[in-house]
Image (cartoon, rainbow, N blue to C red; front, side, top):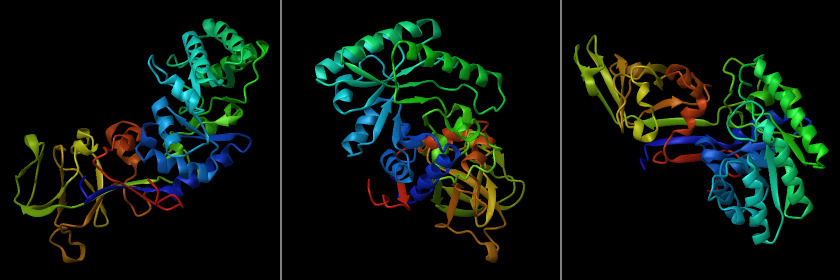
Length: 384
């Protein structure tokens, strides 16, 4: 792993983001979502920081992620909601991990696993209210609810939750939002009539937590917002602070003449004699190749734009005459900041997302394990 590059993660910011999200949903519990290695921030330190900020639940995509939490000694309620065939259900039940149910066969499979584990399984029934991704479709919902009620009566499962997920909550006013809310209420009525009394009903993701109080129910599930990035770019007053700063020391600074082709394919050609800086990060580290001639990088108090093709291990910046001017001189060993909190003028992950026509989720989660995570701030910074 290159010691000259780091993804610096402010755990104090993660804790403060959870606290801010609790203020947006004061009557609900908060689940901190730590799937995909904590959105690239480091799952275990992020989980501990979220719990320190007041989260009482943790969410993962897969059972294996939740089991990693348990092996690290994290005992809070944890939910895994993608359960493909072959998922380690018995181990999950034994580890007291809540399991998302999106199909009738999963009710049966989890009941069997509970019998084998010798203890009831905790499940959250997921209804598809209009995302058409995971979840039980409306026509099949009554049968799944009835099967869950029978398994609960038999002492094999406990229906701890009923949940769903929004499709367009990051587009306030989108007509699907109201339709999904109505569908969720109808699904809850079906569950109630079947005698189910879930501990938590949950629907709100980051965007809904911030903008849609009628969707908060008993529990909110902020993902990207927990890491300080807003799912709605222009939303103000969130109280969120980006937790990750991606930076690297500059490996080389050199002067080149006018007309110099830069990097593979000469997709950038200097229009004057200029100074180039080589930054030793590339698409092997998670810097998108699409950042070629597009993405901003902060060096010596100014934003620059990547010059030429992003390579596997490196990219180039055109510094103009800054490398020669003593008052703003750039040298090998100086830092180049790709994105951070934005306090000092550096780009944010949202700036990168805008430059690449994507979302900040992709920017932070794609940073590869080759880039060390350095955790600072918060009382968990020294733990793995």
